[in-house]
Image (cartoon, rainbow over all chains, first blue to last red):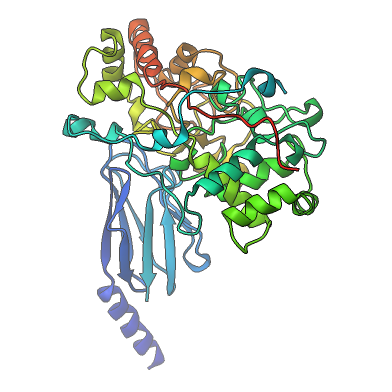
Length: 101
Length: 337
């Protein structure tokens, strides 16, 4: 019975997960603020004609997407509730705040 | 220190520098090259004349170093493009630092300070060189104690930062405030951007086109200050890990901050290691994939753009048009006692 319940919630969680497009355009993250929930994904979309990056040093949501080529999309799943500050390692003026509920 | 000998009076006042205004004559596409009307300033450290005056004295005062021989201005000399025209910074007792002295010019507009960007603000940056053993090698507690016993400085700090005392914070704030007034003057390029098409040569105009077009220099050397503050490994080689030393992030391997190109002709040699003597050589390195194109983690911005020698020469001609008139800084020769 427990397995059924866990499976139900897992499927429900997956179905409820949402993707948020983060456009990297003119050296800016657009939008600059996002409120999401655990399990949702950020899709980083490089719309500039040069490389970008995105990283988070938040302990529970640490990631670094590496060098991201123009036109490339990279997805990152949000793992734990936190307020995350995301920056581009190349362009430190690019800032994105994600409030994960 | 040759600064005292060579510099009594420099041209132009600090505040007229800040009074430069944008113009309606500039076309929309060129507006991003115009100077912002205001210098970015933190809420808790607004620019006042008392703070500028105090910061200037501290900036030029060699008694802030351990042996009284080196000031901030020794490596960031207004007569040398606010750098020192040496490959590497030279501190007390002739100690050589690991990197070229970056210019102080327009650092107010930078979002990270130092070649590796380890400080976010000028206030954070200001106390680093004072304490660095290869620079001024001064113990901060000792310095604060010394300043607190100097009645001249006590009065000036009180005037600039009433009731805040002489602390590491007010010391940093005062120096940072002076640095915020070190803003480049209007250059021939600025007049060109505002509509005077004859003020710079045809080759410089062609250079600007290549700079923003085929060569894509402006991917990084962008905006009024000709830097977007980005960090890159431009394939110079060497052992200096740059920003990677702060944290082992792949994009930061041997990465250094994109320098401003304002007044760049005055501050040779170039790059973080001071290894390049001319603008032509610097341009050639950046536009041909770096000195060691097959190195590890080279920035994807550094690729061979296929430029002709004429195009490189034109870019250099254009960069020379970014030199404004020198700032009028009355260099202090007497310091508070």
